[in-house]
Length: 469
Image (cartoon, rainbow, N blue to C red; front, side):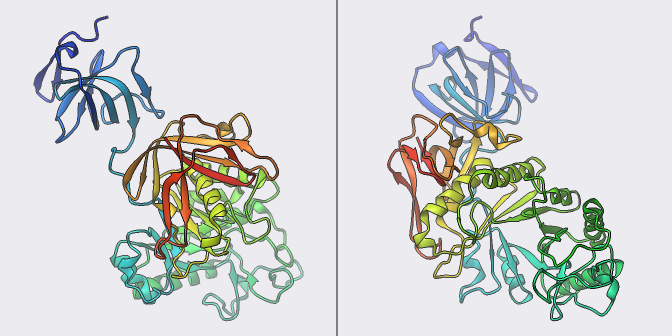
């Protein structure tokens, strides 16, 4: 078949004569835009102000990086080839679900802002997506575009907490009628999600708080969680307790993000509390890739469970708050930071995965400069299990066709992680010449992230690498 014969292609109600690709002067050209239509041997690319509508031809030598997509109307494409604004013969076509060159300034992030640390709320807006805050600061934070979380814990209450009350039906009890506490302590008390009175108290608290300041979401701490309690509730049934928690959230009638994904149960797999997605916007996982406990970098099965949780949340299109809770100084924790960031990027979804780190910084703001690295157009679509991303030699890796640092294009990149506790593993891809280097502390403390490190080689145990072509 002659790929270069003139073809008439209809765009709207008009017809455009496509000239033979062999009749145009060959010159290297790069165009991006949405595919406007597809013919039998070409497609029309709407390149906008660059060239308008341009026919894109291919041949047996054309490299197609599909990212799980097909050449079809509405899909975005980046075309590198020879030709001009009249016609292009593509050497490479990269497909994407989002426009090229329109990357956000950072991945989705979260942090506490109960204090603004003597800064205006606008100082955080360029780098922060979500903030857990209070009524004193919520309006100012929301006004600059940061989404706000209101902390509640209808599942554990102390006498000084807002949902503590004198109605005994709101508390969980043993079969002997005793209240249940955290193991080894007299407080907080375990509450009972079956209690209608408790749900009413929770709703009244949320309504009162929202009347004082703007909150986008209610944070539900310790949801469906009986871990570490002095006893189990009378006739405890995990499925019934989960169902009661679902009903409690549903009856609240406010948007909820729950904290429970780190409570794994006995399955050594994704937490059964992921079923709260049915009634929630999403959930949080504490100790996400790092932890306050030793060893601080998760490894082996623990790391796999976190990855598979991130994957499951992405595939369900639910917000996943990855709470990396190690609190060491950011400036001396660059190995941990790269491990968390590479692990997060390995399976993240740009629209739903939220990184929440807690490394100590002078400013008190915990967003790190590496959060400005946005990786788009994965060469392997979101898997169902992280084992799909395991490479020969032991490392896990995922490549991205288009990567940006603070919205500046830095080329294709790859995240690679070695979660083994003892053995090094080779970097699993070829053609990468640089790596991400992080230095200093937080993004408001002069910390930096630059693609200027040496070419990747061996990945040490419990380490991560982000590399660039």
